[in-house]
Image (cartoon, rainbow, N blue to C red; front, top):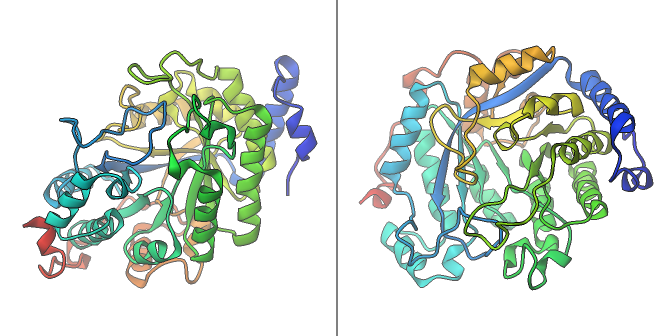
Length: 394
């Protein structure tokens, strides 16, 4: 069900004033009909498992080359120390984010992985997810970039959900001088194939678009339509993020113009009216000072908010305090509610979760599928058995 045709959406790139207000109101009515008067968020810790990557996005400060003193692969001890602190603060999700396939480009990464006992970053990631499940009450959400079916199968056993930003379907941005030049993993066909593989493997999936990196309005719409088409086929997209580009010093795009607030508001509204209404729509509140206005364009979710860790992708943009977010949400007539890494509609779906993952989700969710205030009993956590995973810690 959509409330906009493709042609109508193409024509809304410059809508403003009264017409934009009407568009936003239409998006809000659709949101309210499907999602009610609740805006959700996930209480998380952010684990940047490695900041090395084989891509060279021209707007990124997260990625470090192996010769940088800031380049790192987090050890199991480092990961657990953060996750256990998050557990004490009531966090329920671990967002594991990492650069894409650095071992394919850098000998130093291959050597570091070998010392840990692994040949690929996905193998190490899988072991870390298992360790989190065995030692803490939290559930991993994996953001490992482009993956194939075998990698999805491996990670599905040890994670509740996964994600990867599509960003854009624009192939122009792969050209020299553009945002995705020298980025083999940002080829749109590869990213779309990854999202399709997630659907084939029945993985609750998060994706989205990054706006303002040089794409045209039509390319922005085409990106949303591509996501929606995959959801129509597989039904696995649980949320779509509309994220605004933020210029960063010491990057090739440091002086590139950022999307203004109206651009975000119209993009969010059009996304709500184009996407299947069952898909949750979020926009990051830490990337816009007037994030409260997003509610009036049709979002129903704020994404992951951490009371402990920073946004390592946008470290200069701090997350709002959860109490502050609740107050801003209430001022708009909505109630802030905590969700899990998995949305309620997915909890009853067969074949979407490994047995142990499903059991933990059931323990952490209320009758309506949102997050319970209680934590898991310590005795329900599998104790670390010291076998396969122990070699990582040595």
